Image (cartoon, rainbow, N blue to C red; front, side, top):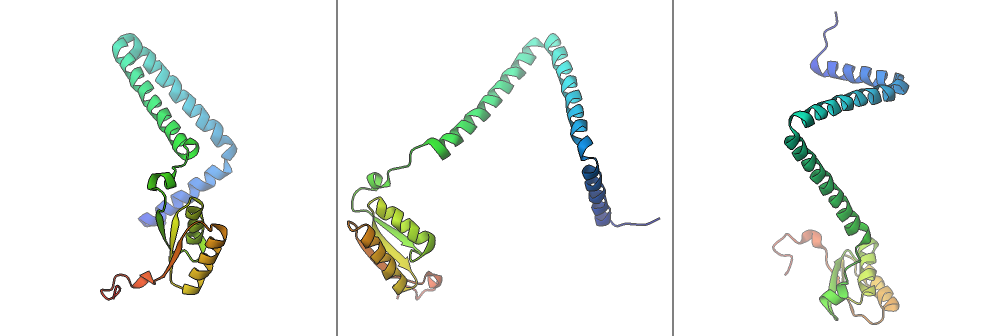
Length: 168
């Protein structure tokens, strides 16, 4: 007889269940469907008996179920509206003309793309990053594409911002 520790037994159990499920995968679906159908038939029978014995309680349970399903449907529809159908907010109208947007990490990548998006909306831009040369390049690109905005640069390394001497 082989003595196995608790963890070894668990791993052995996982191995055998995985092996059996993968070996009998074609049977698994039909077995699960049959089990679910049997349980649903039992549940239907129980609900029919309850409906005869306790009609008010059964109607109350049906009402609770309907309310629950409607709540889930409203949640799904709300999510679809918020993520796909709702129009974008008009930030330039919300914050007014001559508004400024400070964008950190704006010399390249996502920050630079955000700067172009805010410039497209008509915002004035403050570009902030570590390297002055990349900031000047990004500033020239912004002014070339959107000449009607103001662009300022700020070369700062924020990795030292927690030190007391950062602002000096």
